[in-house]
Image 1 (tube, one colour):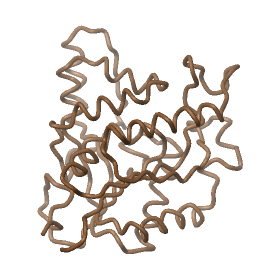
Image 2 (spheres, helix red, strand yellow):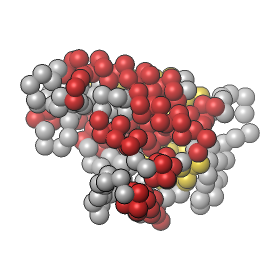
Image 3 (cartoon, rainbow, N blue to C red):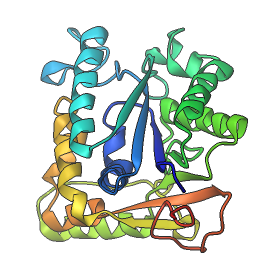
Image 4 (cartoon, rainbow, N blue to C red):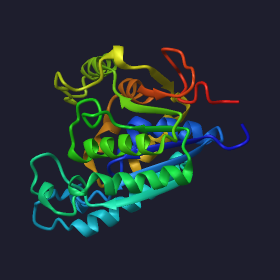
Length: 273
């Protein structure tokens, strides 16, 4: 193979790149694989300076977007990502928020339009591997923008036929259980009670990539998104829980045009020279 292998990750908001794919983006960039991050929205419905929440007095959508995109660029540097592509759509907010009704919200953009723009990026970069969320927006998260990112990625993959392999991010239920146990054992008082529908059944997980050498890259990428308190709170977990959460990234393989084993430890299994 005389051309550079390419990984494309499609995410909904600035900061989404860190937890589920930060390790693989850093690892594969370090191996000389070209990495492309596509971020669909500008994150207007995130926290503003000082923790001001959307809908509260003083929350300025434009300033929040500017801040979050600046943080995203810092995160990209820490992860060694080669190319950042911004679709620039408006953050739709959580399900049920007034922001859902905004005509420019990502979820209200016609699918053929947004998927068409992503397809153009696939034509440009010719990714061998594409990663995004499952139909629930990522292990049961169900954020409207995450679900829409799933939809447009599926549509673009099907329309172009370019990727040799296509994956959904996954959070194995067994890993969630172990992390909760470690947090309780630590006695730090950090409370995390995932719902029954959160997480990916272990039997659906096909690929687990060891990213232990890149935990620090993920930490620094998360720290870049300092305006988002929910993300930064993850850095307050006990060290053992952090290692359990950050050392491996899991995926469900939904397409492979090359022969692969049932269980992989490498997204590029079957594609390397």
